[in-house]
Image (cartoon, rainbow, N blue to C red; front, side, top):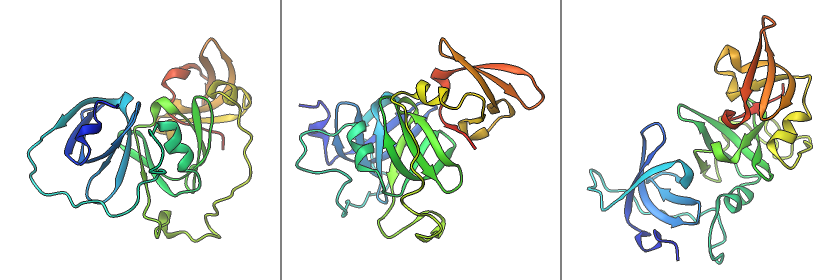
Length: 222
């Protein structure tokens, strides 16, 4: 039995990497994920990013009880990050891979150590599982940016996916690459080579830099 299971239904405060705090009613917990409801949304939070779980916290304001059905089959014995991501395929969601910027879209595919996410803003993103901070499914009546099914179809062009994140990056050697949503000039450049977990990248003014693959949060190939 999961050690947090007997706290289901209680209010919990999570402290995540970067001193981020999330608070809500504990809905369920698995070997590597917890689910909380904050009064508005379900948040699916991988435990790898949780530094502390604080139960029996004093409520400054009451959190409304959840009414919708969670995003998993309640007959399943346990939940896991991989199961949740597979269940999220084709469902509009908001994901956090950096602490200060969310991405909206939907999960397309789940591979060995990464998943593919389609965003109307960033298009196809490859995201290592270890860097997903949390996931929030949309209310079924809502769509990102109010885009209709013509503007944001749920079945974009099929994207070939390799088994691992490194293999997927190697498929795109020689192409312009955007890392971590391009939030820094050194995060955009031509991918030249990958060896021993280091990506060789030539940035805008022909400078060569090396990027540790373990610290890449998202990759896109525009």
